[in-house]
Length: 293
Image (cartoon, rainbow, N blue to C red; front, side):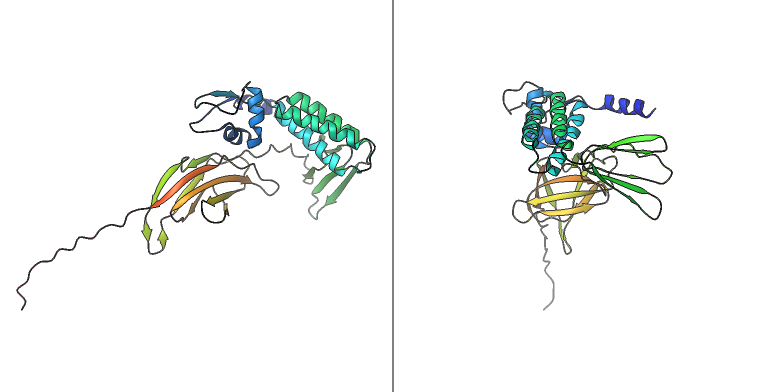
């Protein structure tokens, strides 16, 4: 049943994206893949000769094999980082990992996963498998795989593989939780890109500007990065999928991340907007003649 549900979710994932007005290939990659560097993947996947894409262009998106390749690359990087610098096959593994990363940038995800697995095998056999197990006062067990071969965690008839650099918490009497899907990058909704806003001045300061985005499944909170054209960057926490903040007149750019206790998503596509102060209301004074002497 769970595998059927996962398959259904994968089938519902978008397979293409439409380029927005004024959007670069790097911005499309940030919006869809959560990584501006993914522009090279989109370029290879769609047979583009350069980074220029016309608004309205439909671009093919990577399939689920991209996530598999990412996990293989992460496992290989962790194994290489933990390997003895004097290990006989470490240099060969580093070259294999570099090859895997080149495949990944070229959207050859199956080749990337295979090469990354090859890099991992070259160094994982030269180092011992190391992991830790900790049990808290409520009986929950946390397993952390540090290096070497993957660790198999089994409870209540369910087994889950734990690669080097990963950890897993299992509640007492419960099976291991399924692998948690990475948090998706939020999609900003307000203000629109390159919007021009007007704020009213009051004794307490300018009226607040509302920054809003679509909620991300699994997010516990959000983190907004706000950068004025003149001034220092601000990082602002938000408990809901919007944030009200008072801003002086000027140009700004902002992005937002989804956050949990264990992880943070990639930043959303960066949005630009301008704030201007509303003109002060003029007051008309009328003077009437009197009979006062």
